[in-house]
Length: 420
Image (cartoon, rainbow, N blue to C red):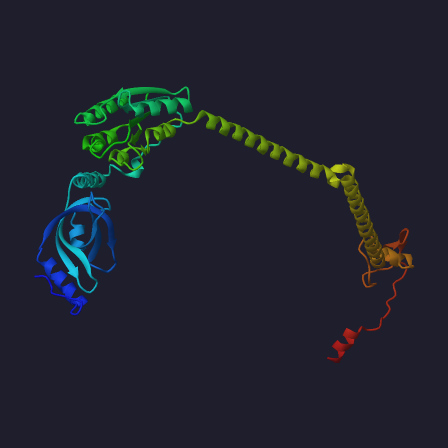
């Protein structure tokens, strides 16, 4: 029943809020379709806050959902996804706001299709088909570029025109295939395998213009993805525009945002390469010039050194050193000779002092018998015995006429023996 109010008897705010809440509670759980425009996950909370917007009218309503419901979806819930949810309308009197408490979420239309593609992507990624270490590098200048595209399509013109404009001598081998529809994946696989078997083809480009998710669905086909993975020739994916991301982009060796971008990635620009060659030549000239100038400076520095400016200066110094050494050697040698002479004189004087001849020269003589034995006593001599007298300058023969014994003074040792 409607509340009875008047200017004299107005209803308080709490009463109005409670009445609105009671009316909304009577609605019960409902199925609601809309588009997600905002997702808010707060740390430490088990509740996820969403905003659900009507597809046709500019009307939106806040939504609360348990985190477990969001995490149980086959594909991550993203903004822009179309969903159908089972929710209970709730009115919060304290804030005066309406909210939907979601109990179940289902992806519909494009959202459901994206969920299937996400499951397929995860399975293929788990097998290692998208591993970065398996990606093959593109050749710098391919001899022949294989192109898989639709006949007379804008993608074909973009790749051929841009490729030939960048490098006029590049060759293309084009294989046509349906770029959408039920037969698209099979025809693209056949064209890919033909180009992959061609030994003259160095790189393969699969190109198509933009389109809806359904139009680009063949390029997420599992058979096509595996065929690209098994190809021995590098493959470039140029499907759709920048926001489009079929699974083919993940398994290909290089992903191009557009067919035009594919031509730029595959074929180098002749003008840019010519400019790079000029830059490298100029850099090489500068490097060689710098090396030559540095060597010239080093030679000039070496030539300016005194040893090279006047080579004889070093020789003169060495000659002076040699003369000094020679003079030192002369002094040392003379000194040694003088010392040797002095030693020799001393030794000669000593020898002469100890020589019997020196004694003989002082008037002494050496007496020997006929047999040449030196005599120091008269005990063995007899008168008339032949003798030899050795003087300083000769020998004298003599005969003993008499022998007289002379008593000598006893030695000190004899005196000591007598005392003992």
